[in-house]
Image 1 (spheres, rainbow, N blue to C red):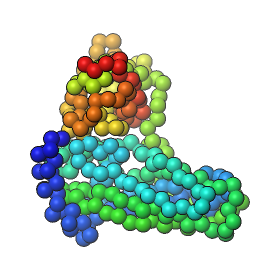
Image 2: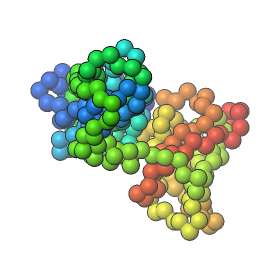
Image 3: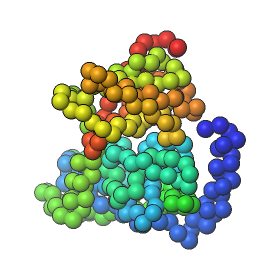
Length: 272
């Protein structure tokens, strides 16, 4: 995004941001698949985002506008937590600006790793969450989320939370060896061109590429070309904000109702 465009956008959103305390468009909670924590046994936690009608939050790479949900953890001694596992994103809009985020209710997953010995009968996990929730206007929000867990030799499932976490697990894009992808462009090329080979006897009608690291912005039109051999070429301008130095192209490929994680490498190590 050009600087003048960015400044115009900020000046447009500022009045809404200042009023953020009045509305947030969102319910947020910290959940766990288990009611208990067992020494040495990892447990999956989730930050569940329930959007009010017409609102959305943002994926880890939101595009031309937006801010991804962020978590800062406060854990007992000896505990650690993984990076966020992000469910597949959706195309959305903040006013007239296209973006990548979540209009549906969604659960962001992390893995909590306890030590092999826990000296207390219970623990408390805290996450300071910050987010941007938007409709026609944007409302940033923050909240310290707390989750107490009893220490137990055996896990005790939390059925309602486990259902939400299992739904989220099904929405995490995974690599699929039946889908092949390669980048036809050189590193730094102004046009990114990706060759996709679907599984045999598969003819997807709706193709879209979500860029995990912002090389392709949400406002770039993607040209889809179907080849006679069944392969598909996606051509899209490189984002103006990208430094054009990456040697690979991490993507989430949307093909009809499938979401596949792909990360092809560029054609060679020389700029075009």
